[in-house]
View 1 (cartoon, rainbow, N blue to C red):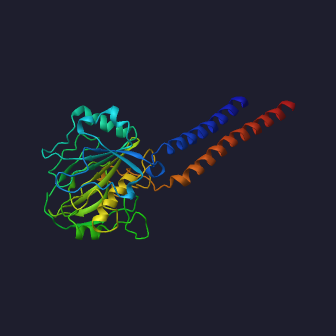
View 2: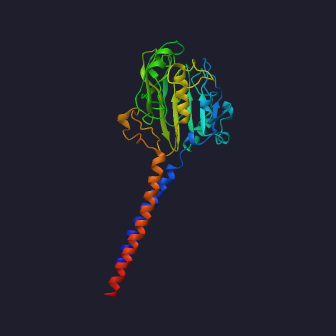
View 3: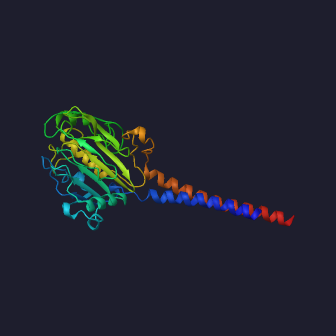
Length: 320
């Protein structure tokens, strides 16, 4: 009986150690662009918005990334595996993204497997995104050339209100001195897996989210409904005005992702009352990995100590 109990105790200790090791292994499988020079980015299928403006990418601030234009027809499983990030520059005026059902399914699966998908639809009519795992639609004012109001609803690595933070963006100035916010598209059909990031009031006086994110499997969805016609391919990222639009795009590219929600706490889950468990804690992965390794080593050592102690006790009982 004593030997059976000893085995049960040791098995439990080993189980805890194995579980901790699995957590550690999961935390190292995330993708951090800043640690991976020449992170491969597919731009589908143009840097340019059909309504003016372009995604910034030629300034030295974007040197970590290797950009490739990928035609809509080439968005397939075989091609997607070459990239860590895909940016859709939606250019359709019929309310649909230019992907067929098979392509849409393959793109969503690519995200689940560990990709990051960023969506821009500057000044377009409302686009149907119900084919995504977490569906939504938008309310779009079109090209009004209007100012607006914007505020970050949480501090994260996609933007900060603290001037001392390297992720600082003055969205108040951006909203007043460009039409990025006044002409922005806002989310009107919500899924609780999405987390609100930038809350705005656009020209339609609709107060809602124009920037949001969602963790999905080992990947990440990001939506940005800002109007980008003030931004060009060579716009340097900055904290105000047009530079702020470029910096928000750069921060989206730089955002780490994976099984750990890297500094994306989801302080404003959409339809929060339906899904209060969405989101997680703010984590510094560089600090957590050594701690996890120490925990694993300590648990394994504890197993051997317990086993040795129990063996000694059994030996003394046998002598008696």
